[in-house]
Image 1 (cartoon, rainbow, N blue to C red):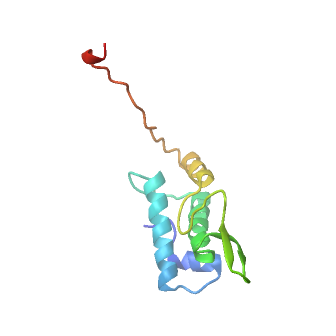
Image 2 (cartoon, one colour; image 1 turned 120 degrees about the vertical axis):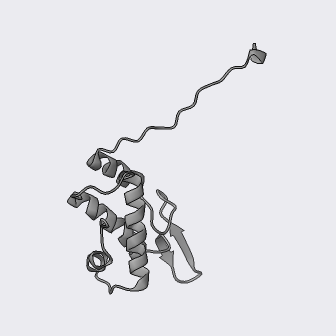
Length: 120
């Protein structure tokens, strides 16, 4: 069972359920599922998790190129300085909120300095 359905995304962005919208709903759902539910979805999905997944997909539907501004004459565009991304992605704030909502603990990457007898 997915976190969101294409029908829910279509209603969220007030657009028809096209193949492109279906793909974006499925990709956003998969990205969030892998990020915060590595062992599988729980029986009940918190409403805020669903809203974040809908907004992750909606961002790609509304602004697929990730533009934050655009000029018509002598065409220019600019991407959002915070993300510099386009498509389907989780912002740092969304990732932190999702991990807080779900209580999933991820271990950080650590390193251990190894020494050799030859280093002495």
